[in-house]
Length: 245
Ligand code: SAM
Image (cartoon, rainbow, N blue to C red; front, side):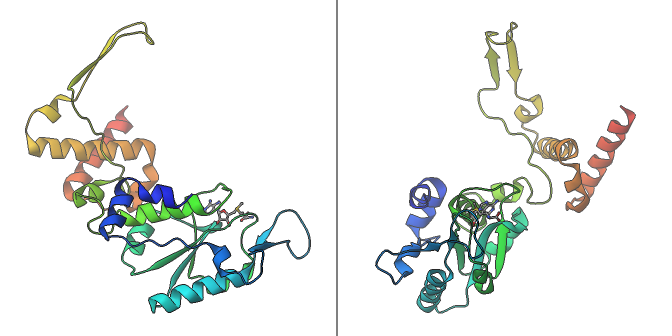
């Protein structure tokens, strides 16, 4: 569940080039019994199984001894603080991170004593921590220099400055939808300004679109967004226009 996604795309390339160093450990390798048991029934009864603390502690000790550095240990959990873009940027500056993936009913609560943070990827419950760990790793990796080819694209992304990204278009400049689904055929054109070659006007249009999208879809983000003078002026215009409507 972890190794195959890590072999693909941008992450796969970054790992092959050595820009990212990711190791996957199987908790069963840190058990001491013949059946390599990592889970047990919950004390006090109830459904499901709980991940035992001792294999996890042995795994953390082994990783710490190999790395020789203090560990940042992240427990994936629906009870954790919400993982956001700002967290991804902060974590990308750390030398080394351990991500713990739970299963079943989750971890024996004593594991939390060895954890530096507990992160949730959203208010829903998944069957295991593998997908959350991959989500967290992918979002962090995009901030590591050299992982994404053009770093400006990361800086422009949604949430990077507290705004959603502006709409993107590519060739062809015109697409005709034949009307099979809609009864009428429809010609969809790229906004003229993007074909104008006027870079100052395009930059301003993109700022306006990013603000307009954020205002429409996620207005609460604007309260903490970092805006320049031009964006503040554009936002005022958009808000006035909205009010007038
Ligand atoms: N009983 C736990 C609870 O309600 O808090 C849920 C355990 S869940 C079925 C199993 C594992 O999936 C968790 O230990 C965690 O590693 C992972 N997981 C599930 N949902 C998650 C989320 N929203 N964010 C991060 N990790 C999650």
